[in-house]
Image (cartoon, rainbow, N blue to C red; front, side, top):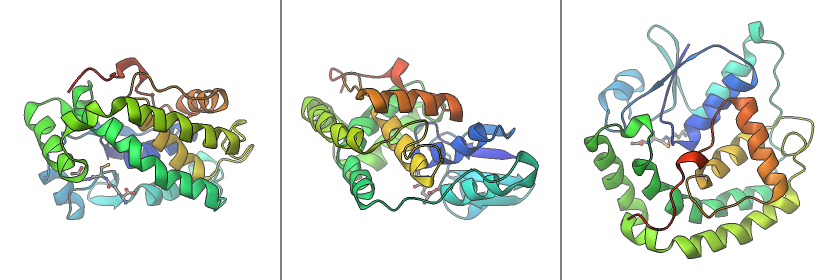
Length: 224
Ligand SMILES: N[C@@H](CCC(=O)N[C@@H](CS)C(=O)NCC(=O)O)C(=O)O
């Protein structure tokens, strides 16, 4: 199986996670961000992740990919439990977008991520995302306030997480896919730090899923 992905994309991260968690062999292919033709030829639109199950057979949608891979009998019984549907966690996951995208989006194209290997790929991403969050230079200027907001908000999640080893304890749930992929966006930013339970959780999940965090390439406030 081949997973077509962008390294930065939180939805692609969700799809990658299940392969690591179940030790399922797969080929990870990172497309350039301005390659519209490849995904359109597969699923009729420009959207990743896409799982190529067999030649000519493609599955889009991150959570469908998670469910499909988890259901493959040859890699053991299914391991993913349903979401706890916690209103507190769901509200937290909605709110995190108000600062994790303004922190991560201007940084991603400056980081050594394969989808941004060309100038035209970086420009494509920047043009598209500036339409949704405004000029990246302005977002960089707001770094100190965004980090302050992140730290306040992370304290709320630290009170909610069980974190040994998964978010709610011994069962891996769909919530782990949402939390890990969202918090990974924050690892783009030097100056962000996770409270201890969340930090342990992110390190554990990164290892268990084989999805590295961005910390080694994190960028502070002084680019833009
Ligand atoms: N519902 C989809 C959403 C996937 C999605 O929005 N992917 C983004 C990347 S993060 C995408 O491909 N956007 C088009 C683009 O980047 O041009 C899923 O869960 O897989």
